[in-house]
Length: 112
Length: 115
Image (cartoon, rainbow over all chains, first blue to last red; front, top):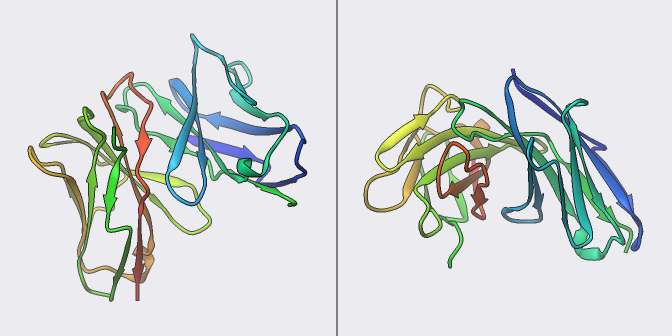
């Protein structure tokens, strides 16, 4: 069975910190890895990483895919209050018509 | 461009009743996915549909649950004879195409509470 594990489960940060969130996966025929941010409502798409695009960056957020280690990290620099959310990692595999398999998420909380 | 729409946002049902959850994909999207999020758990895939076709229902419970995406109108997730364990947030996502188009855009979810 496909498996996605995220760590840590939760994290408390101070404004201005840099944080690293981890995602590892055990799947057959990996195709892509996606990061989402979930606040109170809908998960919001952040990045998609594939064999042809293993590093993505947008503002203070960046992500790297390590296909050898079957993992990915999501970095957030200079954290702000608005970064408080649950960060979800999901993977897709070939031949399953884009079904997303999610990890349980990392809850990022600020001390403010 | 309106995002994925779901309604109702909150739904309360008593055990044994039926729940109908609706999802309108983003404009131009013809692929719809349903996910369930139980309390303190991650999102779990339920079903993937295109217009008038169920493509993958491997995550759907065999009994009481059904889904459709008619030629006209929203996608419907139907739960018959609800039980307390069905209480969860149900999210719909859409994408412009299926295989190779993994970027799915999510709706705000329907929070189902079964009393």
